[in-house]
Amino acid sequence: MSAAEISRVDQILKRVLPSVERALETILPHTLVLGLVEFFVFGIKLAWACLFGGLLIAAIVLTHQIYPSDAALSRYDFLFLYAIALQVLFLITRLERPQEALVIFIFHAVGTTMEVFKTDAGSWTYPEASLLRIGDVPLFSGFMYAAVGSYFARVSRVFAFRWQAYPRLSFTLTLATGIYINFFSHHFIVDIRYGLFALTALLFWRTRVHYRVWRWQHRMPLLLGFFLVSLFIWFAENIATFARIWLYPDQTEGWQMVSLQKLGSWYLLMIVSWVLVTIIHRPKRTS
Image (cartoon, rainbow, N blue to C red; front, side, top):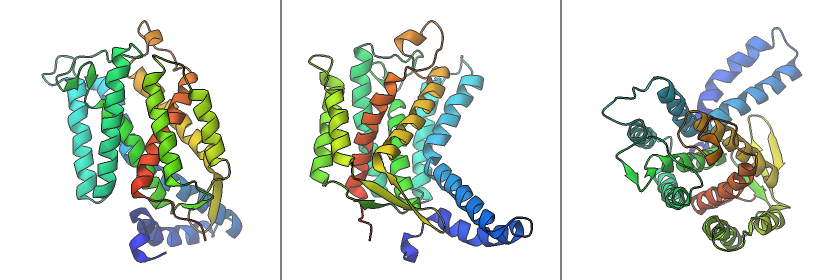
């Protein structure tokens, strides 16, 4: 891997980890130290990739607890300005690249468009007032979708993704387009999500993602990776609804966990996000 391809987190770990390993090897067997370091680095890199989403969730939880209800600036508008500031900071510090920010902005627009339609259809509501909104949708909501795009852009870099049997871009774009259209069309005609699940499985069944943690290369079926990411998003959605960012109809009288059926919706929407990111980060074949 060339110096230009080494991520910032790798550069930091390269300076710090050797001394950590030497200290651990004074009390633990060498092979155990190697395994622990690999696991530790995996967690660090995953947290680094989730940085934008993690900071957004932290602000959502914190404002739920302490934001004054009588503030001149509404909570939703504060979160919008906070997310804008985060995005600018990421660009200034080169935590995100301009072309990645463009894709994230596109997904922001894609997500906001769907939000406007879905809230009008009564799928969920935003219970608090705000000034910066389109219809019933506060503008900051698009950043929750953008956080998924940010994660994919960053995780593909920090883990140096390489691909085995990755399908052609024209196929994945067609799938993503069909998924997005179905989020709207199923309100009027038959819901084809099960067919989309089947098509996703057919398209990515043989696809493996190869990724480097620290010393070793690992690989995982992409369909499993998609499921794990959508599960993580579902957990984040439960946190956000508990903090009353948005509410589903069965949560208006009191919070309860988000239905597991939403896991499937996030699975499909996450594929749309990933495909958008691959327009910039074209999947590289494994050697």
